[in-house]
Image (cartoon, rainbow, N blue to C red; front, side):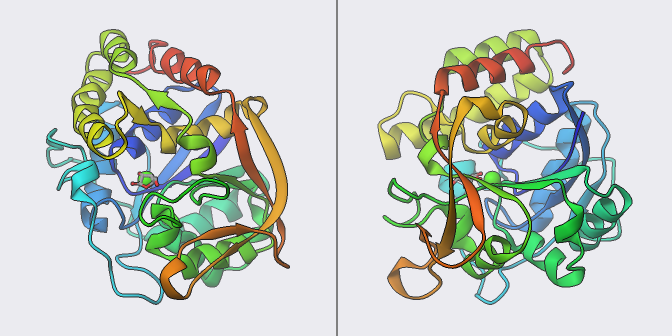
Length: 306
Ligand code: BDR
Ligand code: CA
């Protein structure tokens, strides 16, 4: 199976991605590393631990960066994910505790123990990955791949008219991750906004997996309300789970190889632009959205989640 570590700021669509990885028999989830973003990092860590309990899928969870590499912390988007991260759905205090190593060390040591085997799937701001590169540059040679949910190449941003949230939160970290010599696949708004989850999808998942799927179905109602108000959408964008499906079902995406530059200065900070002198990334520009949703629904309903 595909060994992965998800770097995450749970977050409603982060929870969708994590539960998908836990349910998919083609994936071995080696750990979750947590980052500020949708919520403060302490809350992200607590939410990740809670997800391992509700899914009855124990896995290592490590806490990472509290704020961006070089900038002051930004406000957390509580109007998108709720103050605690799962909309109006509570995440009770988990029994498990985080790995004492912290995210950057956990990432580097896991990759060193399994050279060439682990894909990092980053679905939050990229600070932990940048810190891991700084902590031990050998991580770049050791990973199998890096998938980043972030950026907007040929569509508008979702925080500003230019910038997508995960890149905007820490543009310097994103620039470091895109400049490193490791194989990056970019899963940006170009594809994630094309994939829509609906109330019927999550109701079906809740019927198949009453505990974990029921939790997701309750949490997603808040996310639906945000998408209705902000985008006039009947449903929601499936950002973070689409990054996981880019690993398991790459044939559902149209990929364009290009360097990607991150603008770090001025009003366009956080914008991702095709071209430049950096390494070529595999940027997803097209997607079979219906097939991605079919993978999502069928995997969460496959009987592996309680
Ligand atoms: C990204 O921003 C976060 O709010 C979501 O969890 C996703 O990772 C989408 O721009
Ligand atoms: Ca996220």
